[in-house]
Length: 296
Ligand SMILES: Nc1nc2c(ncn2[C@@H]2O[C@H](COP(=O)(O)OP(=O)(O)OP(=O)(O)O)[C@@H](O)[C@H]2O)c(=O)[nH]1
Ligand SMILES: [Mg+2]
Image (cartoon, rainbow, N blue to C red; front, side, top):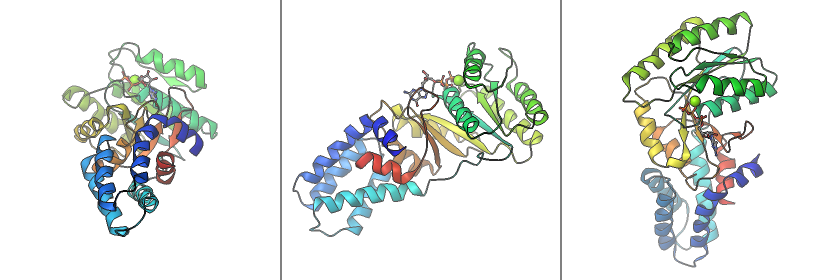
């Protein structure tokens, strides 16, 4: 898994390789830390988390420590910052419902399929609900995933009330005693009050039909937009109850440092990362692995 992550993070690792050069430079600690701070901000880590990490390295090292000590301190600090935002997938066992939310094109439907495959392979009885009734091709897109994965999909019709699709899916979920219901929703921006209200309604229906659900409401964020993902996520906080982040498209982007900024600035756990378009391209987030993959 770590090797896989390391390979997929190749572009971010290239961005981080500039860090390696800093540690080779034979400069003083202060010069290294100044250059490092600049490089971290360029790598989309964000100003706040960068300052915190630099201060922590300064506090834990001595003035005349050689670069490799500073480098190890950097890796440790990144892991220490991220580990606070590790949290297990709350829908990992027992009858559970998961909602995927986020802006258009972030990767909700693909990430949902990845979760479905993962749960199916664990031997769980999985169902998917196509509650994106807003985009014309959304129902068909999820049906294709369903056929490919052998996972049943409860569909709605274009323009229908998403809460009614979810209601139907919940009846099927209960009748068939399934373990996991994954609900795909339409892409939305926070300024679209209608769509945000729809989401609240979906959540209410789920909570009413299955006590304790939804176990997870995952905000799907696209890593390629870097620090803008933080801005986007804040806007989504108007919709209550987000339990974690599914950060997509970490393959092919140099902005993997965004992970650090998102976790620290939002205070939300990163539950999964997406590292490709295929159904297997999902990694459960692990702070140590991530720091290691970036800086090894
Ligand atoms: N490289 C890469 N592409 C991804 C990843 N996740 C999703 N994608 C791609 O991103 C595009 C959009 O994915 P969707 O799953 O349709 O996104 P969505 O959020 O459901 O989009 P809407 O339903 O339109 O809001 C597709 O081309 C996916 O293949 C990922 O981890 N890596
Ligand atoms: Mg979709």
